[in-house]
Image (cartoon, rainbow, N blue to C red; front, top):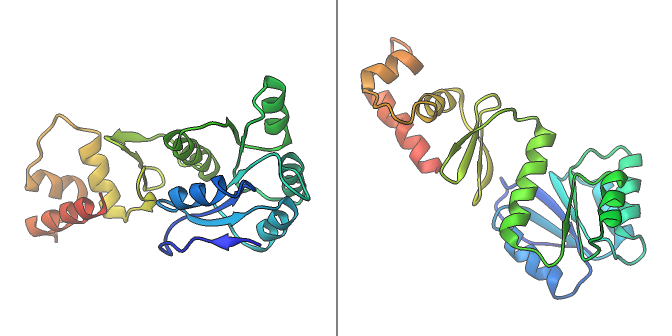
Length: 209
């Protein structure tokens, strides 16, 4: 039976399919820092859940009861699922990886693994699926001006407003330049706005970070 780890409702949804009774709950707990995680230990049940509910990504073990992970990925793709899937398994030969990727997985990670790498790979396959376009790196964050998306290693994906995005684009693409409020008003805002508006939006961006 699937268990859902309670998290903030704005988090992206992740279906974690792992039958190890120790590793599965541990992974769900760690991944819940960023994702709304549904943990499932059975391949057949996971297929039903994936077809009935909406997810932003899936992590799939290969050795599963009822339906193995490779067959699960193939079946979901044949059924029309476009959700990015990452296979996470101890089966790490080149042939294993090729079979997993050819089955429809977006990525393949071999156990043992580091959670930082797993988070990074999940961010990567979701970016490709979402078609975010080129990005600007700001410390640990990635800003995608075309889609107004910001990816944080802590909060996942956030969509900025038009003005927040325009302001962040101006500052992020000119990191060595100091802007006055008047310059920011001319570049980003309208003639009806005041310097206080700049302060407000800078404060908004600071809160989001």
